[in-house]
Image (cartoon, rainbow, N blue to C red):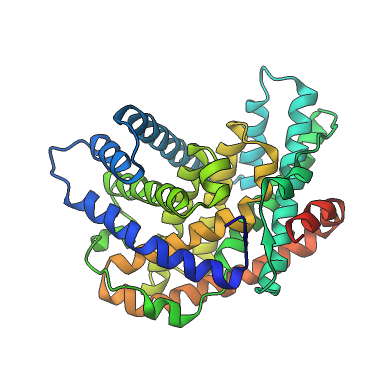
Amino acid sequence: MSTFTWSSMIPEAVREMTPTMKDLVSSFMAKRENTDTMTWMNDELAKHLDISAEEAAQMGQDFSDAIGRFSENMRAIGESCAAGHTREEWLRNTLAKNAEGKNPQEYAAYLEQVNENLAAGNEAAIKAMESPETVVNLSEEALAEADEPRSAEWNRYKLQSLSASITEQVELAGMNGMSVPVDPALLDSMEDMTDALPPEMMEDNVSASLDNGVKLAAAAALKVVAETKKIPFLSKLLPIAGVANLACWAVEGAKCLGRCALGNMSAMQGIEHMKRASVAVMADLVMGGLAPKLFAAIPIIGMPLSFTASLVLPNMTTHEVREKLYMGVTKICETAKTIVHTITEKVSGIFASVKNTVAAIFA
């Protein structure tokens, strides 16, 4: 799957994701109360990926740690916004704190690459949505252009400019993921898996234990599908923390789709929530030092693949959510498209500077 078209990727991903997600989520819900969640996770990873108990334990711990960091980022962003600050201000402060102890020029150059590669991935995602039959190439060779070193001067003005631009690109990546076209026939064809998850999953007061368990199951599902179906970006290039963060984004997206379908959340509330989730994901990936070239791949395949998990999960709660899901998807997607257009107009200047990377992705 190093080359694909968007018209085929989403239906194929949903078909592959559905049975794996059903298996893992059902297994989590059926586990005995006295079975520790991490013990359950490690057993499932060893079984599905045919790896040793030690490897499974390390992978499970990495999943759990990343999910914990995502939750902490979401909490911190929520508190910051409640105090009257913006997502960009939170990200700027987080990036500045992360700079402590690092070579200033090297860190600035890294952020410059992250920004440009996100822009390249976003422009490629927009082009792919406009022409779904166009072949996308995400081989390591295609991403090599995005790995060219940059030179950037580090100062507080540069940080302010970079953090503002990175926030825009991060939110654009999330909105691109949420605006992937969905055929109603695709949702109709999905297996009826209602009652696999309790209705609580689509409510505001979902318990931390249920939420974390489903995120672990989603992370495992993404990893299993990536390994068994040979999706290079996820299986070979993206570290475990990246897979876990995309799974967190997927679960947050699922909750927004379900709540919007039930009329318990407006489309704009859902979009605001997913913007925060996108910033939380990217902040962890930047702080973890993810290779710059991989940021080019996240908008064009990482977020769309996560969105397929977002489509599958609401279908596992109640019949009411299943019956109304397309309405929720349509509301969120149409609003996301409007946001994509607005952000694209603001950031059009940077797209000209990444044309070689975009060209390589469509080569």
